[in-house]
Structures are given as C-alpha cells and as structure tokens.
Image 1 (cartoon, one colour):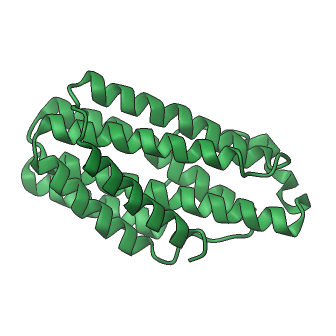
Image 2 (image 1 turned 90 degrees about the vertical axis):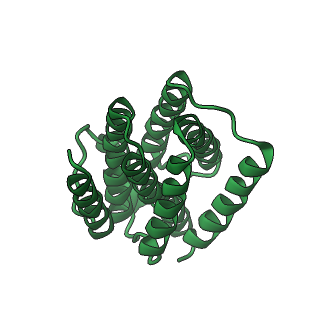
Image 3 (image 1 turned 45 degrees about the vertical axis):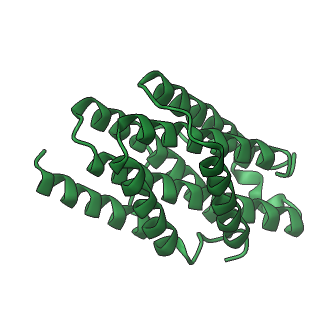
Length: 210
C-alpha cells in the first residue's frame, strides 16, 4: 500500500476500534460457559466486569500501538508481522467486548484518550528503528502477560468464560513477544521499562472504574 493508503487504513482501524465495529475471526474461548454470567453474585459480576473492562482497554491500546508502529516503518516484512498481530488483537477486542456485554457492564468511557495516547507512543517507538520498535512490542506483551496472570488470580473461580478468554489472550501475547524478539527486538533500558509499568498502572487503575 502507498503511504496514503496506510494512513487511511490507520484511520479506519481507529474508527472501528472506538465504535465497536469489529468481529473476531476465531471462536470466543469459553463461549459455552457464557450463560451462567447472570448467576454470578452481584459483587463477583461487578469485579469480573471491571477486570474485563481493563482488558478491553488494553486491547484498544494494542490496536493503536500496532497500527502506529506499522505506519512508522517502511519494512514490508515488519508491516506484515504487525498486521498479523493486530488481527489477533482484534479477536481479543471482540471477545472482551462480548464478555462485558454478557456481564452487564460497559467499555471504558476514556477509550478515545487511551487510543490517542497509545498511538502517539507507538509512533515514537516506530521512529526509533526496527530493533527498538520490536523491543517495545516484546516488553509491552511481557507486561500484558503479567497483568493478565494477575487477573486470573482475581477473577471469580465461577466465571469460567472470562477466565478462558484471559488464558487464551495470555498465550497469544506470549507468542507475540517471542515473535518480536526473534525478529530482532532489542531489550529496552530499565528506566523505559519502569516508565511503561507506571503508565500501565495509571491506565489500569483508571479503567477499572471509568
């Protein structure tokens, strides 16, 4: 695609991500276990909803990051890798939105802000070269994997549908991190990793409620 086509594709991605106009290409994990959501105690249902809202925000940010880094690079192979990961992240976006609906909850009201911020960070990472861009992907996915693992420890045991989604997301994120390192990602400096963790903490704590 030409540069103009890629810019238009990024705009289309932003509109679909923020409007909820997307569908998963893979079957939702735990789909058969979705029915008991209404049977969860109210407190557990609210907790599951808050955690899945945070996960949905993470997938909104993933779309912004991958598409910004795709736009920033001129390497065709890297563009294809970002496209493939972004398509799988769209599955996560659709799964978490579906689960939010089943739980009677809603996405974050700040999704446009999260998308814009993540897109700017993705452009910056992409402008620093292929090694840094891929290293940023790898570190992001490692931190997301840790975050999802913590959610498994907090989700109600009875919420099998949400737990199945989170488990599949973890497996996908781990593979994305591995792919990025194998493609030449470099390890980021410790201060950068710390800044990423602090920014993620602000986002997750805010999205838990808003």
